[in-house]
Length: 511
Image 1 (tube, one colour):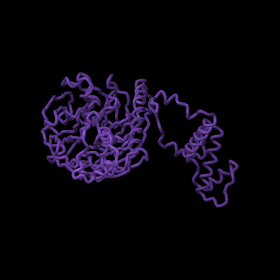
Image 2 (cartoon, rainbow, N blue to C red):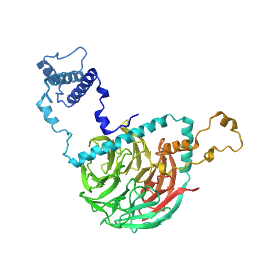
Image 3 (cartoon, rainbow, N blue to C red):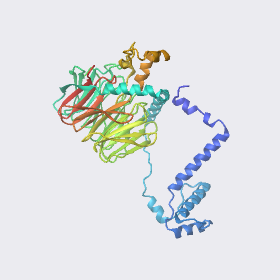
Image 4 (cartoon, rainbow, N blue to C red):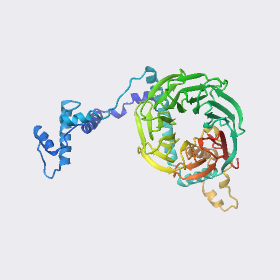
């Protein structure tokens, strides 16, 4: 299959190879446009006035068996046909009804800069091949034998159920608002209400560096996707947002920020790096989220859409979408390539404090002040499942993202598959041997997104399966509200940050 890029997408005319196909497509589009205009058309609701309007345009005022509602629908259809024939965008039918329709909300656009236009194009170029690759992998996974899927789930969930408390460390003099593992899983970043971002060696929990540059409480920290891997230490490796309204960019060689990006009018909460590493999104109490260019430190996009403060933001793995959640109990999914809203997450009854995309690219988890986690599916545009997760606010939700760099093939089958008494000898002779390394790599890729972690103000970190949404493990912290949670990309560590200034590490008991 040829690689899908922005240029091939724009120049691919195979869908319109014939004049007949183009005409059929035009007819469909015209009909959809007519129906769209018909829905917004103002017509009388009084049956007598409907009959009068039908008589004026030369239509029968009633048909056999026709009810009042059917008659009004027929009037709308006839008027929309007349409208389409004349080429008019609107048709004034009733003065009183049309005056009411003027008050309805309309879609509006704000002018954008040339830098934003170029950024949208680059994001499209970046996301299209990744989406194509992800879908191709999902098609391969869908052909996997059911028995093998069951074995993978059992193996992964058995490992998850072994997580225990590895230790606790005082992280700062004020509450730890967020914890995030570096891409190499050897450093943990903590953001504190003291305004300090600290880096720690894990699992030793020894301090590496304290980053000071904020004047108020730090609300969010995020690592560059290639930080501690291929990204140079002198370049941007980390981003943070704080209460004074600034977003700071940090290197790993200095205690002061490389750049301070100003623009928000109120407290900045969560921040997130785009998968390409070229952009940062920040959520703020000024009811907006903003997109920043990492290379120029300029604001590219100021996005409104929430009626109250925006608390959390997260990018999809392809880089095409970004999700935001606010204290208005509404989440929104935005297509960064076009600026349009792709989905509205309406279901929580209290503020949304956390939002996260699944590695599969089409499922989203949101945690809120109503103590629940909701799972949303972008394919069906609705909520799939509601988890009664915690006894108090759900502060953070994080899916497990498996990084192929940490895949370690072994030369022997997993312990669960070892034949102890030779009872399965015949079975092994009937089945042709598979390449163990290839098999384990396929299983490693499949386990990405198979479970997720949540933290709550009830003092617990909980681990959940991401297919049937069942509780796998409950981990107790050292009491107090748990503010944040994260999972390392090798699946061997979980970190949590708490209100009582500590952070905890959890690991399987046999690691």
